[in-house]
Image 1 (cartoon, rainbow, N blue to C red):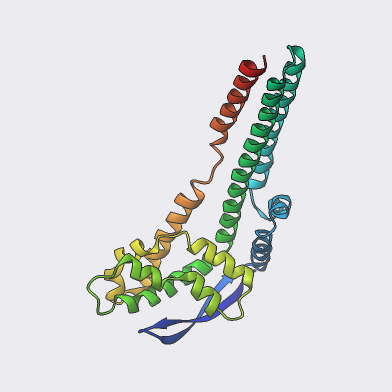
Image 2: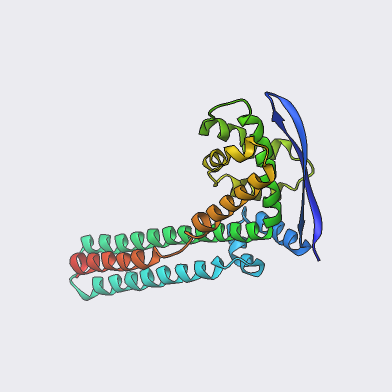
Length: 260
């Protein structure tokens, strides 16, 4: 059963005037608990990898798959390089190339693990976003209300002016009251990736004519489309299909040409 949650705060309008706001949204208590847990885990990479799967993060299995593929491939190639070193005439220069094979294999494995962890981070944001869909509807209304004061009496508003107005990090961290730190972090993390300026300029006519509900609905649809298609839709591990073969070919070339 859904319960009502709220966020209280204030923002500046008309060059300094403070305006209070309250965002109320409905959510399942277990979703709120999962969100807080996931946001805490963002500061602890290994714990996120271990526990994220239990909270709906699909990328955890993908992380271990990528780690296994690169680690096992580079380990096999390293031992193959050692075997070739002692199967041919031993030379000190060949030993240096064995060490190079180890260093390159380790470096690529670390890089692949880092890329896979970034995949897990974005997938974690996806889970948080889906759990907070009703909250982001309310935030769209707040953004429209805040932007209305910027558009009033101005023929043209620049992207830079809107970006300054929509300084979510400053607004959330300095203005929200009684809001869990981890929830603030998640909201900022997602909102900071959205190009609101262009979206709001497209909605200027609706905003200035007073159709704020229509404008907020359109803004949410634009925001949701951008997040789903650009942020989450492009989150994948397709790079593995070219990096892993390239990794193997380069190390095999080194082994064959420099060790024997």
